[in-house]
Length: 164
Image 1 (cartoon, helix red, strand yellow):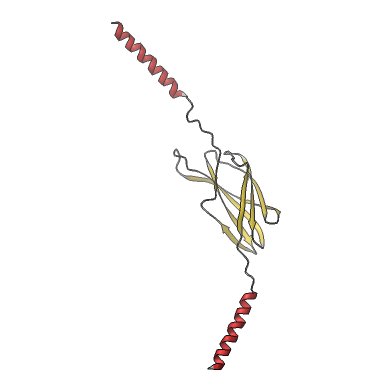
Image 2 (cartoon, helix red, strand yellow):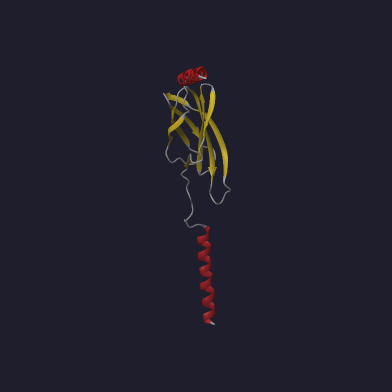
């Protein structure tokens, strides 16, 4: 019985030492992300920069989806661009692209990172940037002309009735 306990204890120690010597690579993490210009407009040229932490990173691909959530259109993503990012410094990656959809009002992004030959996807729903969309709401247009004409016609009709 005592021999079994010693063998078990010795085996447990050997397995513990073996497991502690195995190095586990940490998953990559997105430490920061920026877009230049900060408030891009649809159809503009942008540069994306990402600081990605982790070891053994050999490639980074950024996926940029151009979407909209305006009431006049159904919520939809039009285009998904995949751009291979260039490493400018250790852990700092950059890529340039041109936005292609004029109806988009935000971009959403995620990353495919190759770590030691394995692909890891960094994806979160909250990773999106709204685009600078010019709005023509609030500016008088054709409706203003119809209103002026209706008021003028109203004055003419009421004036004729009062003169009779």
